[in-house]
Image (cartoon, rainbow, N blue to C red):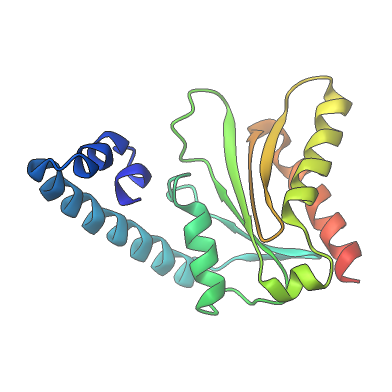
Length: 172
């Protein structure tokens, strides 16, 4: 997992094949992964998050897109971000060469029991934007407690507003 999150999946494959040199490299990548998570969580603690009607938003341009979902999940689990609404993480630190932003959402099981489904929220708002602009603006997927999307940067605010409004209606 740490190998893939550090964009070095081939090291993980080599470890599975019994390569001892790769195992050493994998340990280094695991340390890096843990350091990246700790650094992002410390930044979140010091810089905070934005509260919107149906969600909390963590916008950290330094956190890589490969770990933004993990960071926001850990932040809610450790109460850095409250659990009463979903948390949405935004990362502009992507490997994508285009003008796309990664958005990840996480929520607790108690919110799913209240009707929250992050995959449906992301795909509904994303589908609406794609239709409105007659273009692929949003690619989204996931499941009720965790979802992700790549969004054209020019439409990020529009997407976040739509998701926030939808989640706020569900939460009442």
